[in-house]
Image (cartoon, rainbow, N blue to C red):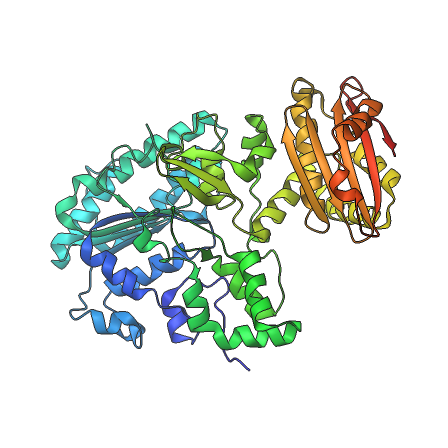
Length: 517
């Protein structure tokens, strides 16, 4: 049996190395990065190893050679110089007031000032930071290293509050600008975050940062590649297959389906979510480990605020300028959703520079759609899981009346503010329900303006369903027959075929009628 101890939730490199936790060696990439540049930015979703990367850089720049024994860095680095380090983690505060950001900056600066001193003329955060860098350089004789983790946390939490976000932006813009003005005193700077705020935001003055988020050579600096999975966890793959009672190839396929599929640029290798992957090996169970550690409520607010058609999410198309920049005033929620890890790059049209996006894997797709349901339908988060189970059970036993009664309850009590977007709301609820049902029964549908055509298939039944908005259920059923939607499913097999016409009435704000043939 494997004796690996998995570092679930542990982000400190020294603790991982001294306490014997499992570690996938990223130090060759780190060496390449520090020897070929000075200022870097990396955007990755949460729980992807950004904080561990920062901690590894800190150990390296502190000259802790002993922690790198047996790793690539041990052979690559010859000098092991100790540098003064300013490490700031913005992930420790809830940023709901201007004072919350001021408090964390003041707390961090005071801690550094205890070591390197202060000056009466340094009256702003930026001036204090500038003075610290200069004094640390003079006192130690070495240029400073600046490591900032989750730089964007204040701006992310202020999405939807333009006034507060503007205050945060102005504060951080001045603070981060010191990195450019004090270049002569800085050896290395590395910033991480989930998102990249652009245009008039904090990055507008930081044009000396090398953004490696979409650079192919650094794609696997966080996360787990297919090669790393097999190089470092091959024994554990066989053990997991044995425990789950499946073949080695089946367990590899299932891990790929659930946790692989992150592409941070076009034509790149896929990356596994490290948090979910390691949890699966530790507990020998598949689960929504990454998704359940964070509730992306700000994403739902963005989707609803901008009246986003959820059907687009599975095949969204956009350009690099949109993907790579976020502005709080933008009416496009896609950059935030992409950079947060809920969508990834699926394809690229080189001629026009257009990226195709989609869900990276089953964990994200199923988790995100499940999370959306209570925000769009008349159900709560606890009940929605059971409601989907009931939908699936009804489809499997052929109880279509119960299925549509349950679906009708999802539209009950539609909030008044949704009336002006009723058709979109109706489409979004249907998309969510059928997407979730599709994880457990075979679901095929194509969308067009005003309707959803749906086919549900089980081992015993086939349902061909046509929806109308402010038409009639009879018209919907007639369309199924006239356009021969059911023809591919009529020949052969022992499955019972249901053709179902459904009408949604805008005045009722609900399903009015369904008829079955």
